[in-house]
Image (cartoon, rainbow over all chains, first blue to last red; front, side):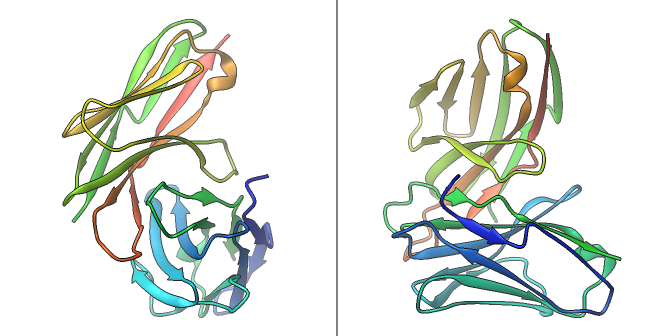
Length: 113
Length: 113
């Protein structure tokens, strides 16, 4: 157990729908990162939150959004889902200082049918 | 833009047959280079962080080294349980609290008994 909790583990939904993925960071970590992993693209950075504020954006589609709540858990919202959004979505957390890398959760596997 | 290229894409070894994985990178000021291990359907698991050229880190049968342009992950006398995808990532000296990692696509290592 890495200490980073992601729910749900699996999600199957239809095209055009909206889903919410949840992440609870490791205790004491202030930063949360979201990554998408597909077979052809590898791990792609989506977005970072630090203590409730958005800090960096990567290749995140406009249909996707995220937020970090006062208790530091984060949610990634995916809307108007397309078949190509099927992927593993990982959350990671870090203390936010020192740059010593970070810890990943076990991921949510999203399948859009 | 930060870039990471890993080679080979896949490597098949016999148990006990030592080899190396390569990670070439370009980054605007390296803050750290990271190696992760990822098992199928799981989140990446942290292995090493390297910060400066010439640095080496070891853990069991794995040894990571760093130069100004690339990193190597040496695997000595591998066992079947070392089979996994090995991911390399770089963290740029971006300033502030942006600790985004840029990942390579990974090397799929298979160790046959």
